Every structure is written in structure tokens, then in C-alpha cells.
Length: 267
Image 1 (tube, rainbow, N blue to C red):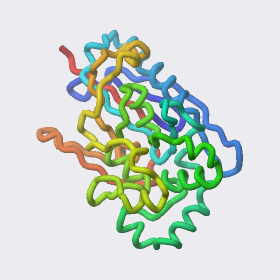
Image 2 (cartoon, helix red, strand yellow):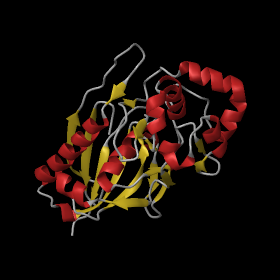
Image 3 (spheres, helix red, strand yellow):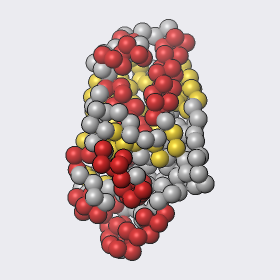
Image 4 (cartoon, rainbow, N blue to C red):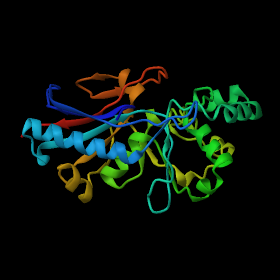
């Protein structure tokens, strides 16, 4: 799930790409340095791309063994208690929270932020965007029940579950990368209740399964596993040891790509 479109790949058990499809969607820049997208466009594009690869390949939903998600990182998706989107996503390339980054870095120190999260506090990252909403859109802030990253919003629409994974979480400025969990100290600094954030899995772990509603919309089989996946930057720097299926990632903040992956094993 990239910045310009949702791409689906249908991959055979040997790693050969069986089919692929891309559905594009717009990005909006209502003010200088702002960049926003409508999360509903991501879901619509994901549904269309999945249906296209199934149709192109003649594959039935029950032949798909599992799904893996990857997509643009750092974006801020806010949901209310009913699971509805509160405002357009503030994207990775949005620079509006620069002043919030400067204020918080001055308050607690650049070194402490680096120790906790492994990265300086950048406007691109998720936490400063939450701080911007708190200061500039207080009525929206009061209604927040869940905070998701872009690909994890698509996971929510696929499964009804709230999950992220370690690579995407590492780009939020809220994740303790040493302990591989949300940082209580950073959550306190940003006035974020822990219950707003999704559970975090490893990238190769199954997080949830395709829901009945998503099965109707996509043509996939209800109950198909959806694994954690990875942020786009982590995906570009991945490697596998085929025998052990070991997965590793690193975070390179200037690499940009994205797609939605399907894995299919022939019966």
C-alpha cells in the first residue's frame, strides 16, 4: 500500500509472481507542507487490486494460503470508538509538526529520544502528528479511540483486529526498539493512552484472519491468516534465510516503496 496506489501481488510457493495489479488513489495538499489521504481510498484500492489478481490468475479465494501487508510508514490514522476515521490521514511526507518536534526535543533532550526510540524526532514520524492534532484539533483529539498506521488500517478493514508489527512501530517515535514494545515514557510525553495503540507482533507472525465482511468484498476466504508484514522501508531491506525462514529488518528512512502482498500455495 504505497503513496500513489495499492498493489497486490499473488505469489506462488516457489516465490514466482503469478499476477499483480495496481489501483491508484490521490494525495491531497490542502496547505503548503501538508499531505493527506483518505483511508477509504486505500481500502477501495486494496479490494480492487486483490480482485484483479484473483481474476487475472484464475485463482479462487480458498487457494490463497495467507496475506502479508506492507505499505507507507509514519502516517497517522485516527479512529473513534465506533472504528470510523476521524480525519484524513496525515501522511509520512507531511511536515506540519516541525514546531512540535522542536519543542519536545528541547524539553526531554535529543539523546533521551534516541535512547528510547533509536531515531531523532522527525516531523515525518507519527507521534509529532498526534501532538499537532492535540494542539490544533482538540475536538478531534477528544474523540480518539485508536491510532493506526496506514497498512494497519488496511489490516483492520481486512480482519477487524487492531495490530501492528515491529518495523512499522519503530517509525512512530513511540516504540521502545530495545524491548520491542510501546515506550511508556514516550506515551506519557505525548499524552497518549496505551489503549489507543494496537498490539505489536513480529513481522512473520500471524496477527488475525480475514473477516466475513472482507471476504465478501475481496473474494478471499474467511479465516485466511494475515501476517504482520513490514513497513515499506523495512521491506526494501529485508532478507530471508530460506531454510529457517528467518526475517530481519532495519529502518532506512529515505527509501520509499509500497505494495500489498498475497502469498498463494498451490494445492
